[in-house]
Length: 190
Image 1 (cartoon, rainbow, N blue to C red):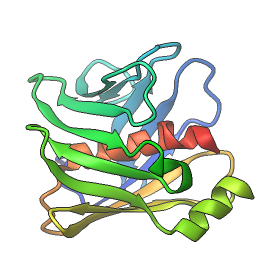
Image 2 (cartoon, one colour):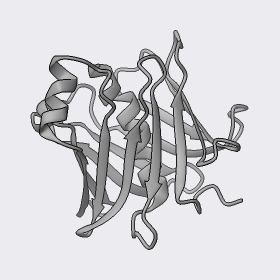
Image 3 (cartoon, rainbow, N blue to C red):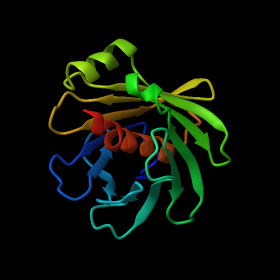
Image 4 (tube, rainbow, N blue to C red):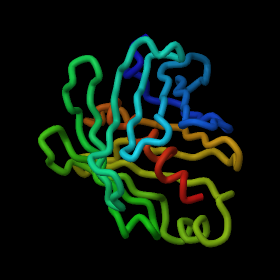
């Protein structure tokens, strides 16, 4: 099975990890582990590596922050085997305080899409009252809905279901990297 050919994926972050985050990405049936994500601890610049499995013998993707501390940080996603940059995910700084919002750039730095939290009202409830209201995101590429990310209700174990739209032009490697960043970066504010 080609790990990037599916329309549905399931991401689950390890509940308690003392040094760095770990995320497992499964197929939509939660049967087959497709990707294993490791975020290095105590790094000034975010460095996240996506592996084929838990053995960490085969690197597939790298997600690296361009700067140390930046509220509107940019994260370059590259194919670990070829070194080719697939694109960049850029957080919309101050706008993300109220409602999580990201910009998707292609390998040539052209804006091709956005990732937007579901609603301003629910975003405010999450930030002010409770992190028990699951987040949902819509990914739009070239004016078309490309994917949906939906967080499961679980206050202890961050989980996201990812649904890619059929015929979308979004590179699934970039889409899966976005889901990882949402769990790692946006998850800190809860």
